[in-house]
Length: 197
Image 1 (cartoon, rainbow, N blue to C red):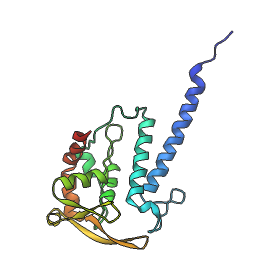
Image 2 (image 1 turned 60 degrees about the vertical axis):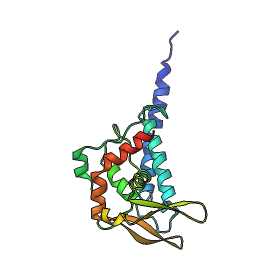
Image 3 (image 1 turned 180 degrees about the horizontal axis):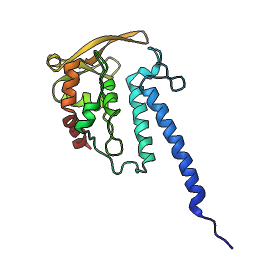
Image 4 (image 1 turned 90 degrees about the horizontal axis):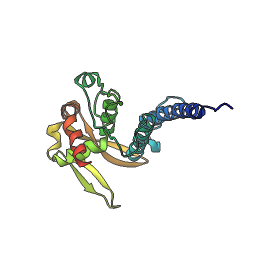
């Protein structure tokens, strides 16, 4: 009587699952970056996927799937943010004002995800608030919104009027000086997040 290899079929299934997960990560990444995952075209300005909450959710799921592919157990072996000088040199920012999530995407595009977690716009904003560079306001519906304060301009942070689903709001943005400030303090911002966990 011959014994079948118990890991053979399981190994094939795991390989197929990893390919599916890798494909899902690519799709999520396109959506989080404002692209139609099928055509590659930019999503309409009023698409719900431009909502910062959706973007954060997509990046969160993407990070979880990346951990699954690497065989990392949830809640165990969490990586810290790490970026090299060479990686910083490779970061390309769009011209003009950009939001914090766009800044984080540009950084995450160059870091080595096998040794570093991604940085998020939410943690950047949180640390800037703790540093007194940004503030927060409580809205009528009980939600909180990040806003600039009297210190923001000297760090290259300003606002741009935006429209989402017919509602106008002031989006916190970073000019060239602001991008450079964030770039120079990335490790400090990420270290503050590490201390909390």
